Image (tube, rainbow, N blue to C red; front, side, top):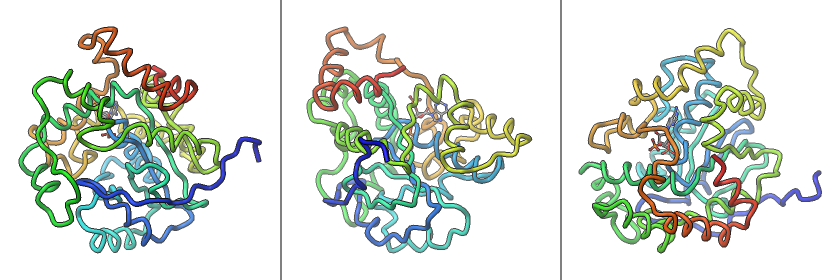
Length: 299
Ligand code: A3P
């Protein structure tokens, strides 16, 4: 064991809001080969779900991520419906979560992949996600039974204002940002945890997919590599977005293509002043410490 190996995390709290019902994990029965894909949000979750789906199903173009890989802690449909669904799955399961580690149930046998992305890129992606949300998005989040806390309102017209609100009120109007990164960073040295960065996926997707495959102990038939790489490319995912975007994209004007949006980092550079940008950098070091802040900013 490495000297700085952290202890297995324990669940210390529940998170319930417009999106979450973390209690579902308490009733979830793990299998030893389960895979859990976590992010804060807007950080490449769907991309890595697609990658893992492609690895499990050996490059099958028909893999349908929203059907096969549910967001377990999303409070709709309720756990009474969702749990039997995942219980009935006979393939290797790959589940999505947006919870911080201390609200999750942690299995020493399951494999956990956490993806990080610079908060400014997350925010730019989130703004598109939120600004293009349609009436069904608000109905699902605000009008289904079990809503806890404030309903979600449409975003302001200015992305700058959205950025400052998000930083000033930590994750407003969705959920806190820093605790997600901090909690996963703390357990990065556990043998069943793999940290992946969105920018590294962009810079070397093939290398990162190979690293993910090794971590998951999936041996890839060399003949299937071209199909896997093609199906995980931005262009393929954009063209076939309904097979990867949550709920096939029904929550957004413009459908699933809205969700697989630009796939680029740094779009904030042309909008934020140097001072506005530094506000994020200063907070990142304060909230995460220099090492984790540098990792998150990479790319
Ligand atoms: P942008 O909105 O910046 O384009 P999540 O799945 O966590 O919500 O993340 C969504 C982000 O991942 C979106 O970012 C989306 O375009 C990007 N994405 C999804 N698949 C991608 C791919 N194959 N290549 C690059 N970016 C991808």
